[in-house]
Length: 381
Image (cartoon, rainbow, N blue to C red; front, side, top):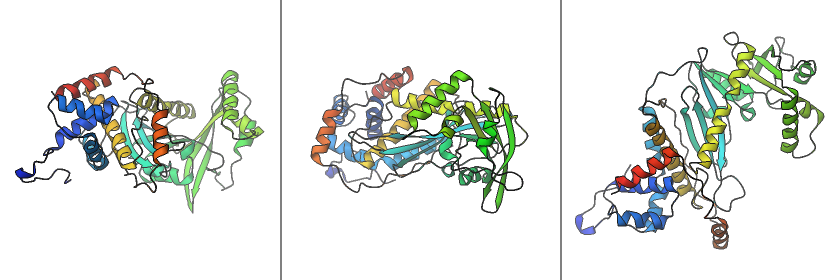
């Protein structure tokens, strides 16, 4: 990629190989250490002697190289996944990270997890303008994608089906209109009000209209037990920006999804499959609490992008160390570079943001992360 170029000996270039720089970047991302401490350790171990400013400049331009490493790790792995009732379950979602002092979203990680072995199926990093859409995911035939309400729209359903895969998506009544065989809009609330029995799975035939095209499927729903229904209503009240209307409170007692699977799975099995989607939420929590994915080091989009990519690369390496036979599927990584900043934060804002960071609040890494950190440190000796 032209990151390291040969230069005459009399120039005295300090970096003539990408390996020591990569070690420093991975150590920096794996330990969440400062730039000064990282270059000091590298100099003490005799690995490389550069300034913290030079390492920061390398971080700014190393994003594309880390993207290539991520793609290579994913594309060269092969495995034979276990099938769940003939389908390979893939849970897709997105999470956000914020830079120091930011009150909004700095970057968004679009992520898909293969549930058969809990390995990444798709990784994409965008800026705050990268919206959540199923069109980002490169589905493949034989896969069954489990998606949340954020992906509940006709275009998203069509994008999954166009690739030969199937989808189970939680229905958002406002964004995913469903129709019957005659093309009449299905009144979901009316069907829910007719459901008095709890924990009894029901279904009806439904179609998603995308222009003149009709995508066949089923609407499956179940009424939650009384205790869980009360918790769901309370959660709906908290999430509502204003007063929660009666329809929203009543619909909170139900789990209703749309699936393009017609005959292979029963309605009960469809809902059981969708319940497994929470594995990707748990993976996000692990990435943030243990691997410190959301602890961004600075304000520049270029270095933030490199930081996130390095974190994800370390996560894939940790999976390999923990389970050498763990499979990572082909064509799973797509990284979108963050655009250059439109305006740099004021120095006073940067200083206040640095003061606001509490150095004592540090999450302890997992055992695999500690072993990985030790291997990186020992490799520099």
